Picture 1 (tube, helix red, strand yellow):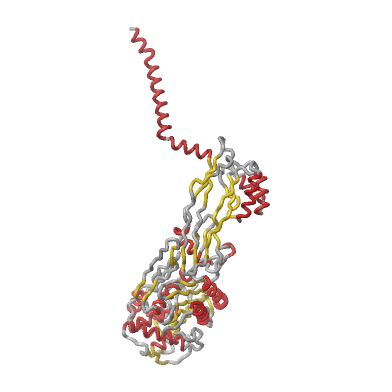
Picture 2 (spheres, rainbow, N blue to C red):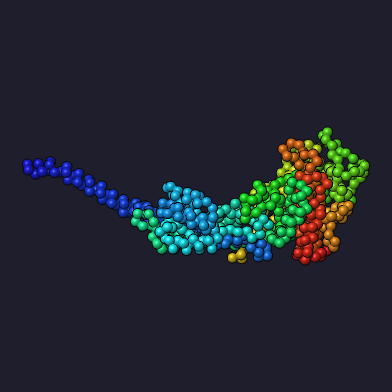
Length: 560
C-alpha cells in the first residue's frame, strides 16, 4: 500500500522531470549538431565586417600591343556607419583631401542601419596615402573608416575607338562594347577583406584587417583594332563626312581574314567620361542598324544575273526614260533619253530603270534566292553586342513595283557591316569571312578561329563583277575614289529613307560607298556612309582618303 501511494504521489513528478530533461537534451543536440554552424556564422557576423576587393580587370590591347583599356591602382575609402565615432571630424578630413561637400560625407558616415558605405571610390593613390597617414596618427578619430586598394578602369585614348572598346562602371560591371562582349575573360573574380570588431561590435580591433578571399585578376586580350588607323579614320569621318549629314560611319576590314582595323559612327563616345558623351553615342551603327542600302544592292542583283547565265556585262537592255509599274514611276538620277544600256553601263551609271528591267531575266524567285545566297540579310556573327540583321519579305508578298525596288535597294534592309562583308567576299574570290575583333588571349596565347563561307559564285561571275566595279570607279566623272597605281573597285549609293516607315523623306538621303583594293598585298575593304544628307553629297572622296592613309601606313602594294 505504501509503494502504491509513493508511485501515485511522485510518479507524475518524475515523468515531468524526465520530459523536461528530454527537451533540454534535444535542444542541446539541435544547437550543437544541427544549428551550430548557423549560430557560429551569426556570431562571426556580429564581430566581423567584410570589405570587397575588386579584381584587376584584364587589359585590352590593339593589334600592335598598345593598351587601349587598362586598370590602374587606386584607393577607395569606405566606412561602417555603425562603428563610426567622429563623423564630423572624418568628413572634414575627407573634404581637405578629396574636396566635395562635408554634408555629403557626413550623411554617408551616419547612415542608419548600415554596416558598409563608400565614401570615395577609386581616388588617386597619393591621396589615399595621405588619408592613411592621418588614420595612423589619429586612430580613434577614424574608427570605422577604411582605405583599400581598388583597380580603376582607364582609357588612354579617350574617345578614339571608345564605341568599340566600350566601358565598365565603378562597380566593374561591363556596360557596352568589347568590355561587355569579353567580360567573362576580362573581369576576374573579386575577393574580400575581413575586419574584426570588439566584443560589443562597436569598433574595429587595431591591426585586424585581414585578407579573407584573394581576388583573381582578369585575363588580357588583343583585338584587331589599329588605334593609330582608328584615329585617322575618325578624324577623316569627322572633318569630311559627319559635317555633310546627320551622322556618318565607316568600316575598314581585311577582306581575307575579317579583321576589323577601324570602325566608327558619329557622334563619338568617350568611355573615360560617359556623362559628357551624347546620348546614343555608344552605339556602333554599322553593326546595330539595318538600313535600305540603295544602289549598292545593284551589285548583288547584277551578280545574280551574271550567275544565272541570262546576261553578261555586255548584254543590253532597252531603257525608257520612265518605267511604269503598278501605277508607280521609276526613273534614273541622271539625265538621258530612251536608250539601250549594257549591264556594265547600268552598274556604272547606277540606272534604276536598267537594273529593274534586267531583273526580269531571273524574276522574283531569282532575285530572292540570290539575296539569300549573298548572305547580306543575315547577321555576320561579329563578336560585338547588339548586331542587327537585314530583312526582306518573301516573293509571294511582292508587287511588281516592290520587286523592282528591291533590285536597287528599296524595300530591303541591310546593315553596313553585312554589305561590307559581301563586297569583301567579292575581293576574296567569293569567300565570305566573319568580321571580328578578338585576335588572341595574350596570357594563354589562344587564338580563336572564325567561320568562312563560300558564297557559291563562279569564277567568271566574280571576275566580271570585279571588272564592272572597277569601271564604276574609273568611269566616274570625278574618279574621287580612284587611287593611282591601284585597282579600286566599288559602288556608290544614294538611298531614300523613311522616318516613320510610311513615306520617304523628300530631298534628303543616306549616301554611301563600299569598295576594296583588288589584287594587293593587304586586301582591304572600306565602307563609308552618311545619313540624312543632300543628294549632292558624295562619300567617294572620304573613301579615297581612308584607303590612301591605309596604303601609306601599311605599305600596301599592288600585286596584280
